[in-house]
Image 1 (cartoon, helix red, strand yellow):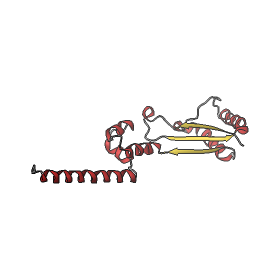
Image 2: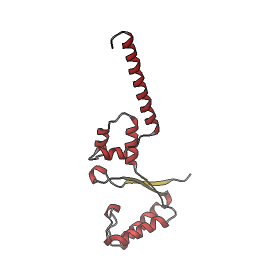
Image 3: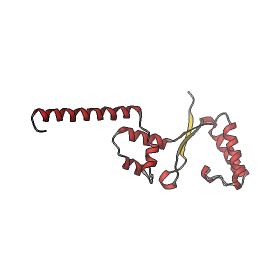
Image 4: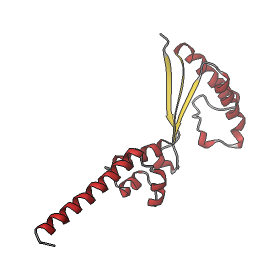
Length: 159
Protein backbone atom coordinates (compact mmCIF):
# COMPACT_ATOMS: atom_id res chain seq x y z
CA UNK A 1 0.00 0.00 0.00
CA UNK A 2 1.37 3.39 -1.01
CA UNK A 3 1.10 6.33 1.38
CA UNK A 4 0.67 9.90 0.09
CA UNK A 5 1.16 13.31 1.62
CA UNK A 6 -1.74 15.59 0.70
CA UNK A 7 -1.59 19.38 0.93
CA UNK A 8 -4.86 21.34 0.69
CA UNK A 9 -5.51 25.06 0.53
CA UNK A 10 -8.14 27.56 -0.53
CA UNK A 11 -7.53 30.42 -2.95
CA UNK A 12 -9.07 33.05 -0.69
CA UNK A 13 -11.48 33.77 2.12
CA UNK A 14 -14.44 35.25 0.25
CA UNK A 15 -15.64 37.80 2.80
CA UNK A 16 -12.19 38.89 3.98
CA UNK A 17 -10.51 39.03 0.57
CA UNK A 18 -13.53 40.43 -1.32
CA UNK A 19 -13.16 37.82 -4.08
CA UNK A 20 -16.07 36.61 -6.21
CA UNK A 21 -14.92 33.00 -6.40
CA UNK A 22 -12.95 30.54 -4.35
CA UNK A 23 -11.07 27.44 -5.45
CA UNK A 24 -10.16 24.57 -3.18
CA UNK A 25 -7.05 22.75 -4.32
CA UNK A 26 -4.99 19.75 -3.33
CA UNK A 27 -1.51 18.61 -4.25
CA UNK A 28 -0.28 15.18 -3.32
CA UNK A 29 2.81 13.07 -3.78
CA UNK A 30 4.11 9.74 -2.52
CA UNK A 31 5.43 10.03 1.03
CA UNK A 32 8.93 8.94 0.01
CA UNK A 33 9.12 11.84 -2.49
CA UNK A 34 8.12 14.64 -0.05
CA UNK A 35 11.65 15.56 0.98
CA UNK A 36 12.85 15.64 -2.64
CA UNK A 37 9.94 17.90 -3.65
CA UNK A 38 10.46 20.20 -0.67
CA UNK A 39 14.20 20.58 -1.38
CA UNK A 40 13.51 21.36 -5.06
CA UNK A 41 10.91 24.01 -4.21
CA UNK A 42 13.32 25.70 -1.79
CA UNK A 43 16.02 25.65 -4.50
CA UNK A 44 13.68 27.43 -6.93
CA UNK A 45 12.90 30.09 -4.30
CA UNK A 46 16.61 30.59 -3.55
CA UNK A 47 17.47 30.84 -7.26
CA UNK A 48 15.03 33.76 -7.55
CA UNK A 49 16.25 35.51 -4.40
CA UNK A 50 13.27 34.59 -2.25
CA UNK A 51 13.48 33.37 1.34
CA UNK A 52 12.79 29.66 1.91
CA UNK A 53 9.66 30.55 3.90
CA UNK A 54 8.25 32.77 1.10
CA UNK A 55 4.53 31.96 0.77
CA UNK A 56 3.52 31.51 -2.85
CA UNK A 57 0.28 33.41 -3.52
CA UNK A 58 -1.33 33.11 -6.92
CA UNK A 59 -3.28 36.32 -6.36
CA UNK A 60 0.00 38.22 -5.86
CA UNK A 61 1.77 37.42 -9.14
CA UNK A 62 3.74 40.41 -10.38
CA UNK A 63 5.96 41.02 -13.43
CA UNK A 64 8.97 41.14 -11.08
CA UNK A 65 8.31 37.54 -9.98
CA UNK A 66 6.96 36.16 -13.26
CA UNK A 67 10.06 34.03 -13.97
CA UNK A 68 9.85 32.52 -10.48
CA UNK A 69 6.18 31.61 -10.98
CA UNK A 70 6.84 30.16 -14.43
CA UNK A 71 9.65 27.94 -13.09
CA UNK A 72 7.50 26.96 -10.10
CA UNK A 73 4.64 25.92 -12.41
CA UNK A 74 6.99 24.07 -14.78
CA UNK A 75 8.22 22.01 -11.84
CA UNK A 76 4.67 21.10 -10.80
CA UNK A 77 3.66 20.05 -14.30
CA UNK A 78 6.92 18.27 -15.18
CA UNK A 79 7.31 16.15 -12.02
CA UNK A 80 5.39 12.88 -12.41
CA UNK A 81 5.24 12.40 -8.63
CA UNK A 82 3.16 15.53 -8.07
CA UNK A 83 -0.59 15.45 -8.62
CA UNK A 84 -3.00 18.37 -8.48
CA UNK A 85 -6.77 18.77 -8.32
CA UNK A 86 -8.90 21.86 -7.87
CA UNK A 87 -12.58 22.30 -7.12
CA UNK A 88 -13.75 25.66 -8.48
CA UNK A 89 -17.22 27.07 -8.14
CA UNK A 90 -18.01 25.55 -4.76
CA UNK A 91 -19.68 28.79 -3.86
CA UNK A 92 -22.30 28.11 -6.54
CA UNK A 93 -22.73 24.52 -5.36
CA UNK A 94 -23.18 25.80 -1.81
CA UNK A 95 -25.79 28.33 -2.95
CA UNK A 96 -27.66 25.75 -5.05
CA UNK A 97 -27.71 23.19 -2.24
CA UNK A 98 -29.14 25.71 0.21
CA UNK A 99 -31.67 27.10 -2.28
CA UNK A 100 -32.81 23.60 -3.24
CA UNK A 101 -33.24 22.59 0.38
CA UNK A 102 -36.24 24.88 0.72
CA UNK A 103 -35.04 25.72 4.23
CA UNK A 104 -33.14 28.94 3.45
CA UNK A 105 -34.89 32.04 2.15
CA UNK A 106 -33.37 34.21 -0.59
CA UNK A 107 -32.49 37.09 1.76
CA UNK A 108 -30.56 34.79 4.13
CA UNK A 109 -28.79 33.14 1.19
CA UNK A 110 -27.88 36.58 -0.17
CA UNK A 111 -26.28 37.52 3.18
CA UNK A 112 -24.42 34.20 3.45
CA UNK A 113 -22.95 34.70 -0.01
CA UNK A 114 -22.21 38.39 0.72
CA UNK A 115 -24.04 39.51 -2.43
CA UNK A 116 -25.13 43.14 -2.61
CA UNK A 117 -28.21 42.31 -4.67
CA UNK A 118 -30.72 39.49 -4.65
CA UNK A 119 -30.40 39.35 -8.46
CA UNK A 120 -26.81 38.14 -8.05
CA UNK A 121 -27.96 35.48 -5.58
CA UNK A 122 -30.67 34.27 -7.97
CA UNK A 123 -28.05 34.02 -10.73
CA UNK A 124 -25.76 31.82 -8.57
CA UNK A 125 -28.35 29.64 -6.81
CA UNK A 126 -29.70 27.11 -9.28
CA UNK A 127 -32.56 24.92 -8.17
CA UNK A 128 -32.25 21.22 -8.76
CA UNK A 129 -34.97 19.47 -10.77
CA UNK A 130 -36.17 17.68 -7.63
CA UNK A 131 -36.63 21.01 -5.79
CA UNK A 132 -38.63 22.38 -8.74
CA UNK A 133 -40.83 19.25 -8.82
CA UNK A 134 -41.41 19.50 -5.06
CA UNK A 135 -42.39 23.18 -5.38
CA UNK A 136 -44.77 22.40 -8.25
CA UNK A 137 -46.32 19.54 -6.26
CA UNK A 138 -46.71 21.78 -3.21
CA UNK A 139 -48.44 24.45 -5.31
CA UNK A 140 -50.76 21.78 -6.73
CA UNK A 141 -51.58 20.49 -3.25
CA UNK A 142 -52.29 24.00 -1.94
CA UNK A 143 -54.61 24.75 -4.88
CA UNK A 144 -56.38 21.44 -4.33
CA UNK A 145 -56.81 22.23 -0.61
CA UNK A 146 -58.21 25.67 -1.44
CA UNK A 147 -60.57 24.19 -4.01
CA UNK A 148 -61.74 21.52 -1.55
CA UNK A 149 -62.14 24.15 1.17
CA UNK A 150 -64.21 26.38 -1.10
CA UNK A 151 -66.40 23.41 -2.07
CA UNK A 152 -66.91 22.54 1.61
CA UNK A 153 -67.87 26.14 2.41
CA UNK A 154 -70.31 26.18 -0.48
CA UNK A 155 -71.92 22.94 0.78
CA UNK A 156 -72.36 24.51 4.22
CA UNK A 157 -73.87 27.61 2.63
CA UNK A 158 -71.14 29.91 3.97
CA UNK A 159 -69.91 31.34 0.69
